[in-house]
Length: 189
Ligand SMILES: C[S@@+](CC[C@H](N)C(=O)[O-])C[C@H]1O[C@@H](n2cnc3c(N)ncnc32)[C@H](O)[C@@H]1O
Image 1 (tube, protein in one colour):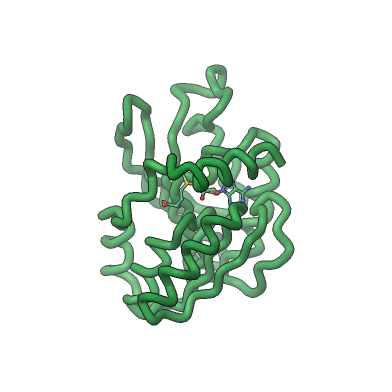
Image 2 (tube, rainbow, N blue to C red):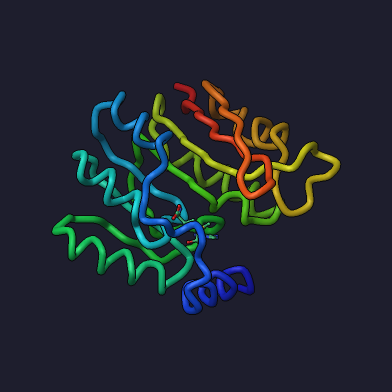
């Protein structure tokens, strides 16, 4: 509840430094190398990446806990003339997302969750992605599991998704003096 209100407030005040209106090169590279299918953007914000995917022929669904973000995404999709399904829901307890997806994308949602919420998120994710489908995750990281308070460590990310997903790549980076990584997982068949 507090988590949701915090994001709602950030959207209300326009304190959304992540909302650049530009899709990251890692997503573009993925789209250039895969045929379009069904994609789910988890914590889709104002829909920038949904629009990028829809323009490339993907059938897209976005879910976000902030109703303000969802409304902005609806307006952007309408202005772009694109059919995009948008759902206001909490991905740690989500019941409103139907069907399975070839791609699930998360840029910056997973790392904002508590440890308990991340566990629930991982179990929900398994039912969203088709066997063989991809989970593309951008997350901030703590150095190691002991220092893991606000953000996950690399070990906990690989452990959390390891049962149902094969890790196919990790690209490390740094953002605003934080370590971060792009993880690509493939749902086990
Ligand atoms: C850092 S922003 C990134 C937004 C978007 N992915 C982007 O790259 O522009 C994180 C987003 O996750 C959403 N979010 C956080 N917790 C969530 C939850 N439990 N369920 C659904 N969305 C959530 C926030 O409202 C916010 O829009």
